[in-house]
Image (cartoon, rainbow, N blue to C red):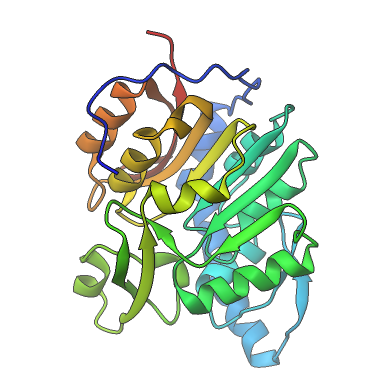
Amino acid sequence: MDAITTGITPPLVRAPLWPEHDAGRMARDFLFWRHLRVLRARVMRHIHRIAGHAGVRQTAYGVPMHTNWEDRTYAYCHFGTYGTYLADLIGAIDTPFLFLDIGANQGLFSLIAARNPACEAIIALEPVPGTHARLARNFACNGLSGRGQALNFGLSDRAGTHHIATSTRHSGVATLERHLALRDPTAVSVAVEMRTMDGLAPYLRDDLPIFIKIDVEGHEAQVIAQLLGSPLAERVMAIFYEHDCQWSDGDAIAGTLERAGFAVTRRYGRGGHFDALALPVRG
């Protein structure tokens, strides 16, 4: 499916009362507390790994996950390194919705969405086979077989088999773009399946507003263009995505959002790496 060429009417779905996050608190968090959480997770990961701790353990976010102490990303999930901003947004939704998790990794935010009784369906995309296996196990141990699907493919503008660069120590940095391989000589290449919206659409219920979370390490422009260039756009209540100015195409993303009747209303983070919340706006 091609990128957007014409405007789309903003979705006619009732907007939740999105929680506000105090600017002072955010400044302290990203300048200081977040760094301490990262340090703690990295140190404790090695302690748990050496001790051989395994099985299912409760994370700082209140959801259980299968342990994976070899992986820095899992340690960040376990110790709450990512903060509460996205969890707060998901928890504020009080009408039935579908949670679409693109770049789900091991499923932390899908599991958080499942705790909201208004979340009636969860579709999580994770293309890396080994990571997807852990995602599926976490869905199973949280009893999500009835309303959650863990799909072993990613979303892009070109369907087929592609190669993704990933790290054996940090699964969350997996990317279709070139930047990881250029900066990390230990990165490995894995064959993955990618689909366009034509391949994703059959999995999505057509009767629910949609909250979309995107974490694709530089492939955001293509993913957002696929989503908002489809009829799905009329049901999107929010898009929460990670952005890094070093490898994300900010101009392309901004243009796609504007043409579809969306705008970034909040940023979480400092400098060139941050999370963004895009909401529908009335023109």
